[in-house]
Length: 173
Picture 1 (cartoon, one colour):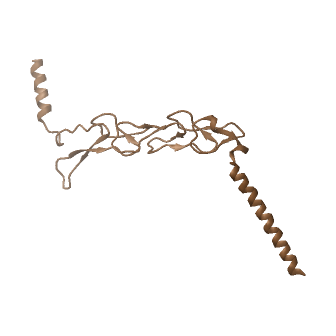
Picture 2 (cartoon, helix red, strand yellow):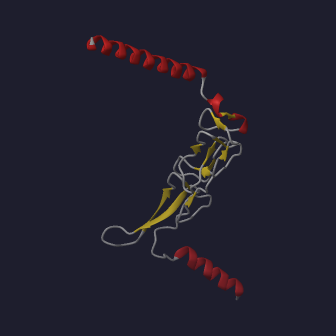
Picture 3 (spheres, helix red, strand yellow):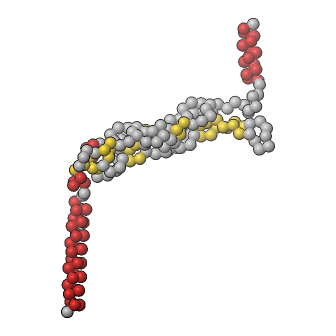
């Protein structure tokens, strides 16, 4: 009797329509979408790729999952998320990219949700720094070319001011 019941159950499962087209087992990286055609009728089952920032690592699922903070996905239809590398971070779930660490901050670990701050009195020369070694004293952060440019600007302003003062004194005579 038990075998007969099992066979009957299997027959019914394989031959009865539940109101959908044939069962569609959507692959990883997609989600199952059931739509009712205009005017009604039997719903149509399709597979839709997961959007950027999302993933699905199982088959036959109806939703895609957000990539967790510290990870991202910049392509559609993916079964996994990519890891934020050193020098970058991502605080939000469902992201399409990672963010570079700002000036004065660094990140020496992968999958970070924030960047570490340089010690007091130090900063980084660029964004996206991947090590505390990138933190330099603040006065060394200004490249030599910029210091000379600042000196040249001060000299130019002083020269222009001197010229204007001499010119003014010529008109007053």
